[in-house]
Image (cartoon, rainbow, N blue to C red; front, side, top):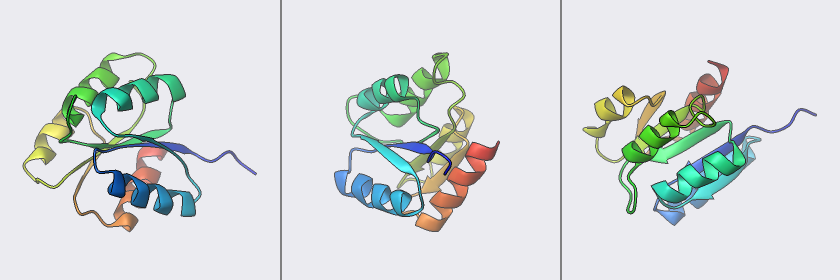
Length: 122
């Protein structure tokens, strides 16, 4: 049996992280969790996930700052990132910063699964 793809979910909303992790595990993914941008970057460097689901607006280090750090680090530069935000205004900034996809919260779990599958293929 092939090894499950590992997805890091980074969001300060712990309920959202739990719900997303349940849905992703049901679809066969292994999940990791972080609750702010600093913890997300550290986890990505340490655990090398296959993809990252990253909220834009968080305390300590926002998602755009975390994405910039991920892209500036050799070990994490190639990891596809799907950004989430309740504000559609964040979409252009997220995509220009290097996110592969942007999903508006509340997001549809089917769209998240589709974005993950596509991002990891490319």
